Image (cartoon, rainbow, N blue to C red; front, side):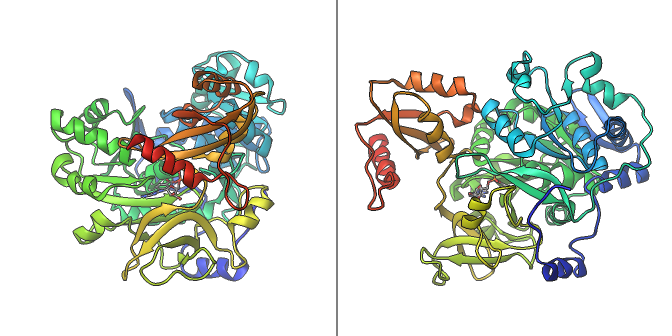
Length: 530
Ligand code: OOB
């Protein structure tokens, strides 16, 4: 089994007694649909319409062949796939035999993948031959523990498609991990030097999926467009593809949230529901002015970053659909505005938690309860909020208090009804259109350049993305932004983490504690861009 910090036994029992944790693995909902409604369409990807029976069969084929190869409990897998049907086939296959995956984002490069591989020591890699990292076998050779590689878009013995389509009988001993154990790792946006992993159990994740599907009124008639990265918690479980499979609806895969192709997919496949980050909503509003609203879209979930109230109010008239705001995190807690909430709540807040047992505390900078009506740092514990990052004791000591509350690093206000409004952030992270960048990770990479002696990454406001990043760099010899970008690219990081701007300075301003004064650096950028 994969180690993780469990919930205290009394709380775990309470979550079971209340029917939150029902002891069901994450593949069970798919299996139930395949049994009850085999011909209903589960997935649409390009020209392929994949029924529940076919999705389950593909997962079963891969699962059985991996089980024959000796994969099962205690094993982990590194998976990196684009937004294609195979992503869900692979996920369900691994759930069936208890192999615990990290689903890397498609934008991730060697820094991120190496870090995940180092943390979970996988024997199995499932990736896309079409991804630049796998154009040749160089990167693969840097992952010595990998024994089995399956590639999307490759023939022969390493072909993923071959394994998905060749029927194999499941070995009798193969089964999912127990529901109270780790099912997979979610990715943390992070605020430290290395990307952290979040163990999610079947029990806790399944609960968040079921409740999300209910709160978002997902049914077997729902057609959901997945236009953001499929592994992201928002697209997997809030309510995401797994929420749609739970209810027996249809997931339509899109490669990106580009409005014009998405509007076409919405019309062609009669999409009723989708999920976007605020920056994509901005593009959709512009496109709708030219193309008309995307029909028959009825409901739009928006989350992942701050959503301006002025933009929120434009959604019903200009996109022709209802709005639900979502404030969630891969670590657990997800808040929604409800479909029957009054306009002030729908447009002006980020909603309230899924469960009455999501315990929320707002804490001031001294660790005391924030004064009523005042913002405080969000601390949370509950039936689907994790209890510790994977193998990260130091980080966990900082992120949790002695009562098991997780400190999310968000500054929020709460109204009398419990609705939350995100007003800021205390964590050292940049939210670039919903994509999270841990400043420290990039600062460490900048400092690997031989001429760089100090570096600080800060957020600068951006009209389209909400925030962009600016790197302040101190170096012994004169450097230019282009060299720094080349340096980072040669180390291999996701494009969204490349600083948008560079400023070369003689020294970083320091706080009284001797740390870079990021408040001052941010203020400097604000006056520069004003
Ligand atoms: C979602 O998950 P993550 O793990 O990528 O990022 C979580 C962080 C939050 O701590 C907060 O800082 C920010 O993203 N955030 C928002 C927000 N939703 C997330 N900030 C302001 N307004 C919002 N509505 O981003 C995520 C996970 C599940 C569902 C939706 C989003």
